[in-house]
Length: 215
Image (cartoon, rainbow, N blue to C red; front, side, top):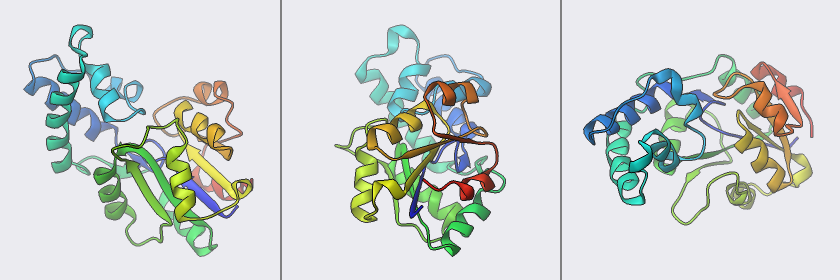
């Protein structure tokens, strides 16, 4: 492999408590009921706007309300990005090993770009990244493969030498649409059944197993 592209939330970082607390803050501040933090793994994965839409009551899921609640979410989240967030055990060592092997690494996240770049810099700022890409205005969200193609313009690599690593069906579908190899991880926000149903080409239970995969 020459390039490994990682999803961020649920793959590199366990962000679920900070995401849940930010969403609950935004809901309460907007007059809507909150949710248990344990329920949030099923709400995330398709970007912040979709997260807000999912946690709002059915009759409040209008574009205008979602936009207003999202503003409150981002105000809170930007101030608490890493209050509870931490890398999954073994991830930092794998990223460093890939650096040492001269294998390019990149991030492709549906989280908005500012938060994505700040989190990567905070937790993995000493590593060499080929690209770090979050959700940007004008770019469609995953599973649309545009974010992968954008990374490939920054890190030109034959698709046969690219591995995409993520924790959800969204990630596996992104890899399929981009025509690159996929690897599902079982330590994230979704279960192995979802990864198998999405036809992940590889499924790993420990970060160290990623190094052994050669598309």
